[in-house]
Image (tube, chains in turn purple, red):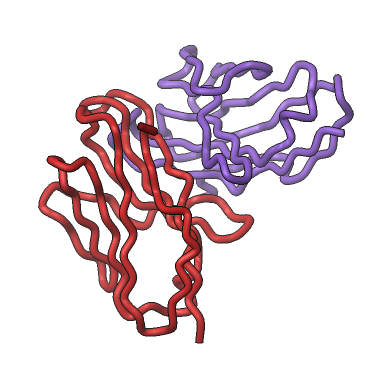
Length: 113
Length: 112
């Protein structure tokens, strides 16, 4: 059972480049989310989805897009990378929105030069 | 008042010590509470859920005080392997509604 799988684990981008962070889960969870974690800031919610075809913004959505075409996958897109998006990104999934613990992927470390 | 607040620490304790962390939350409608553990450069992992009557899992005890809007985590007989950052997590709404809000974490370092 793979759980939540994130790719890539590390990435370096130049300012203005675009890329997609992949996230897949094999637990048939309806709820998936993306967080970023910065020193001294804790985990902040970027976008989330309560099921296939449904997405919504979290606390810090600017500069990011998401889609949820299947239950399993929830990619995060950076359209035009900025140095302020240098961070560690975590994808998580759970059975429901707010009353079940979330299972995290092992993160993507992203540096924007 | 921030939604979820924790003492950042670090808490430096010797092996075998008992250590307690507190966390306060601002939303009185919150109904789901968790403690997560995060090791350096790793993902957060669920340590335990926190129930209204309090709950225990081995050396770990979690308590909830709704009136004062805080939760606590007690670790007894600390081990070197307990060294990590402990995240307090609270949902923002009633029942299954609302997202989970993560505290910034409390760092624990257990020394020999």
